[in-house]
Image (cartoon, rainbow, N blue to C red; front, side, top):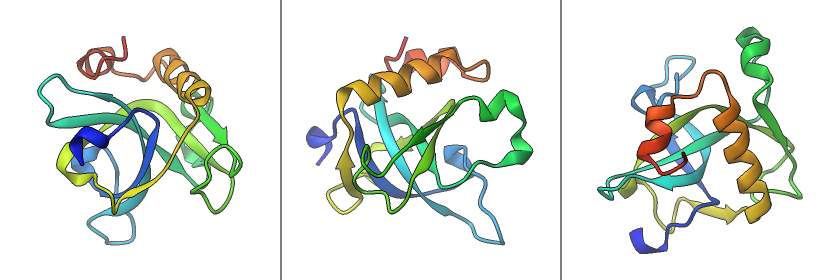
Length: 135
């Protein structure tokens, strides 16, 4: 499957603190929609962003300004309109993504907008973005 992973693909995967996700309610992981934005040069990991169903208002305006609305018509695998978290890049091991986690693919124009929003975020990690070919 590794050679079939594409930028703009959306996967539904288990994520935890190692991916930059904080699990809630005593769980060790959370299932998140993950949008592929880039690949590291060793072929071990994928950089991308996650989709949140709601805006966490405790994050403050610095973060919420970089939660990009995404509609069901833009992302066919969503059940309801949501938000792409463009505050910082998340990483997933390449072997965590496969034909079972794949959900849908986004249009190239939307992926470009997501990348631009991520790169403009004041909380983004530019070194990590470069690792995954985004800068």
